[in-house]
Length: 516
Image 1 (cartoon, one colour):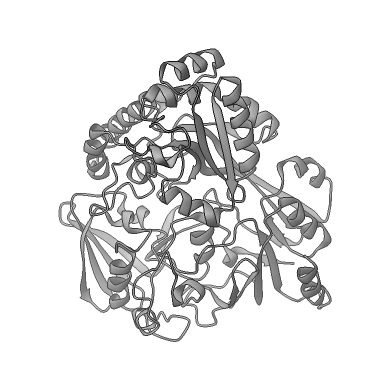
Image 2 (cartoon, helix red, strand yellow; image 1 turned 120 degrees about the horizontal axis):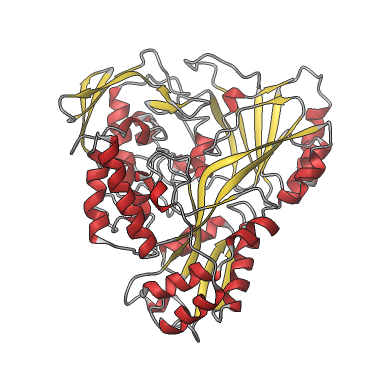
């Protein structure tokens, strides 16, 4: 913070017309590679640097970006995209259909964390330099929505710098460097310290912002970030500590921007037989659905929301919120809190007497560690012993991918704003070849869910499609595939002269920021 204050003192000494902007985030993006990590901190930040064929507007509607138009091909065979001409990457290279083909091959590769996005795609065909056909294995009416965060990379730049494929483990040139077509370009990157952006002078779009230089600084402690906002060291923070909202509302120098995120916070479980070595209990404790139900009934979600979230969140019953397309009204009731029933179920399932290895991030979701501590106490009250291990998100995802858990906390925001999205990523049986279940860390599997998913993806009739989503929601609830907890609130803080747009996907879009 001393270094931050010293650096920003120079900014604050500039004339009032200066358009430099400084903001703080809790979680630093893990990478500058748009295909390496499928997470909001990465995708939200890189939406300022890279662009896709389509993008989401202020109201979350799909609008043209690097494609000026798109239309279905034949009877649901795929989609034809007409590309925007005259677009250049930040190094001056021209954007063409070859970059779309390259970006598809790269983002759908086994090395990419975005490969599941392309499960419905059979091939991408170059029609001419400014036209591509994306062919799908079945009719896919929501396909354009599903690729809003698929970002285009310059094939020549990536190949010349040894970054033809993502490298999630060791990293490569694209991990620290970026070359997009977007409104801002990365001019310096120091992971966990600061990332500096400047406007891309050759950007094709209409400039709405008035920023000349942007500095993003990770500040893991929300209270420290709040102090930086109040002192003027930063112009924007995300999030504002819930307990400080009321105090800030009376301060004329700052303002609080509140909303509801598209993200559902939930618990996941290791449900794979023979995976006992991942936990401390010595048995596959969560293979039995009664064990998962015991956890569900032991957690008093309304109490957590009242004490930790100060009433700024709503209870969830499914992997999507009621605001998402495909939400099942027929299954809107959440799991009921019943500590005695939880105790009985835990005993029946053989969970009692074992130690649950509970993994939790401490810098990813709003009050995440405090929520996990409350859950740990509630499970203990129902006779379940828990070993809580909270850690930075940079360590958290590798732990989950290595199956080092019995239970874990996860937040999910569907990129398509549709209930199909978490089914594909979280509930489908893991299948690397089919690009399914890439975030299904616990190995949940149900043959009927797998059967329903492609039908949901291809069904055009809304009534028939909703019936299948309702059936899927019932299966996931009955089997306690996950335990949905609550829909996360959005609580942003900004200096009074900052104008911005808050979207429910929690993406902070700099091209809509002005500083007065």
